[in-house]
Length: 473
Image 1 (cartoon, one colour):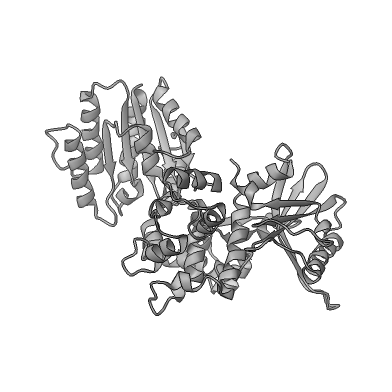
Image 2 (spheres, rainbow, N blue to C red; image 1 turned 180 degrees about the vertical axis):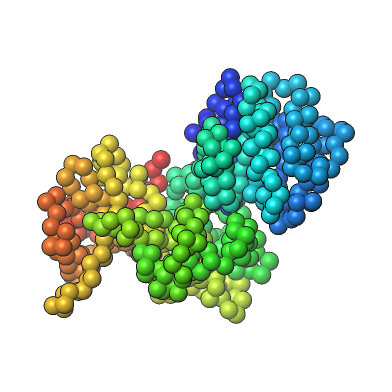
């Protein structure tokens, strides 16, 4: 059963109902459910379905193409020598089909574009010179190497320029969708457990599909990530190697960002990671952003060139904080960390990421979903006079002349603001007002993973949101 993805399914069905041939590109992070979406939407009813081979030369790719053609009914298929021949044979398969709409699904397209293979040119020739002129072809291409799909297909400056009719960037599940999935699987998880699971895995459906009923969340995480034969034990190496032909520079950037809570500017990233400032770095950052591993956002009051890059992939963050530190190979490492300072520090960091990726739900809880607004971070350095610096991880600048400064707190017990924490909040507010000189009203907002214990200090917040709001659709 397909959970969620209603809008994406509607767009795919509309492509089939269109009176013209349609070119569809489905892309997104590895394991996010692209292939499953297409298969389930069309009930595997394809005129042609082919998946590229990982890390395989052109000769093997073409041999696999021939096998897929034969499997779908082209009995006389011989192994093509070029991709032009391969797509020409696909034309023969389409011609002999009696289906009203011929749905062609080519999965893991980037793997097929081997060096000097001419694959993209052949794809251009097939679509522009033949398929688009018909009225009965739906070509669906898919791939986890999101940057390749974006650069070579969607933003192609050659023959495929503006040829893609439907672009579906498949996003990870929200908390609402993860809850629906857990209920469907009868996993028996409370919302607190769902939140912690999300902080480990993010909204990646494939990861969630590996959770087993009858085990606690701690047992599941130990079994999946820390057991030597765990299904996700080696996920980190496979994750980046499968997406990028040369993964080292990407891993270096992600690792550097993983050391900072709030992210870095390009200049800070270059300095901290000892990176070379050139066009290749720009491409790496763009690719990582397109694949959903990092986000780029502007700091309040600063120009775009001072944009901040932040690691937002939950699994990668979890890997850096825990998996890579399990040097002794303890298969129960996660269970042993449950009450440590490392665990609680990670909880605070991961919960902030959850909030940042559920901004629509936060805005709805604030009652401002219909108001134009932008989310920023903000920070101020210590002054020469010895005044401490200040940092705000999330502020919402609203068009109704209000700025919401958000404090995000993860605690197992109801959150209780004390005098020490109140001083920090008031200092951040004071520095923000004095440094920005904003003429807008500034409201303090508390986003708590648990309920909030009311006291004199809690009244400083104009609005309190609990994690329950993050589970809304």
